[in-house]
Length: 207
Image (tube, rainbow, N blue to C red; front, side, top):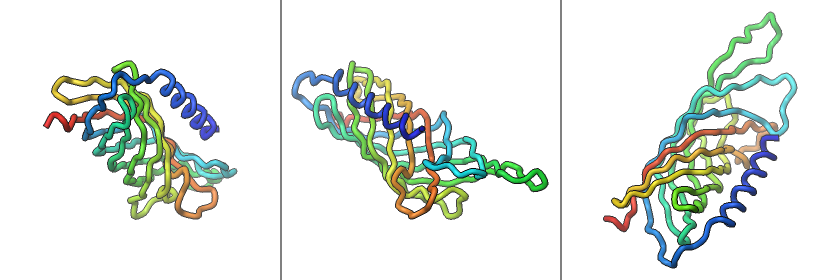
């Protein structure tokens, strides 16, 4: 169900961005570099085929810090990439008989993410972004399946461009990690992440 909702929203938002984003002149914007921080949301573990009697998972906390790079393709369309480090904590609730210890416990894992996304700017103060992410599971010992693989993300943002060349943005987003896992695990666990990314970029032409 979550996968269906994610795909449907992705198609609707991306199609809408191409309808409302119009080129204004032929001069391209500059390459930009910036830093980002993501949190303020929830992370959840799910399987495409859930198992009867399996443990349940609840969101605890997560954060992501990253460096991003933007390259313009047109007046309104940019490619965004970079590298990010994420730390996640999940609360696991075992599904055990009453006479056994079913106390909740925390599980942590870390990811290195390399995004390859498009950013479509419109109405001066907004953009939508979406695309793929390469996930590398940096955990040494985790109760969650290895998240190394290809993930996906989509988001909508409010931004402001200062005359100094600095831009700031607030970017609510949804991510699915390990959508296509590299490990051959039956009933593979995936991380569904909803959060808010804040960032600052700098126009390299202003150097």
